[in-house]
Image: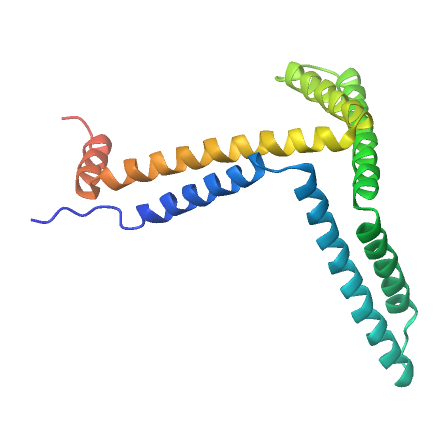
Length: 193
């Protein structure tokens, strides 16, 4: 009798390989690479703005409302142009705004922690999360571009570790015999004599 095995174990392995490749890409990420990505995002916004501008001109000729589309096209054109001309500066401004947001969120978490009445199972976790969020925000105020590269590389490390685990679990899944598993489940749920 042929033993049945999980057929789609390879799908998990492929996803693990993709995760490892993505992690390596992030680990090798440099400031120049990030600036190049920002420029491409700027080109996307510029093209989107041009498309919206063409749409608004067509709508003017058809006597349709164009105010919102025209406004969106102008904003997209301005954002795209700024991202293309000043990729490093615009990314630094974005990261500083992200740092301000992180500090505000961290403070809100600490205020919630102080105002909680009664027992909370994980007050220490909320305290640690709030403090780490504030620290991340403050770190991004000082040389935000360098810290962004470091954070991206840390995420890359996690992606590599996750990919390795996925490949490991896929081979574990491949070795599982479905009929043996059914027998184990059957014996587990049978009432004792």
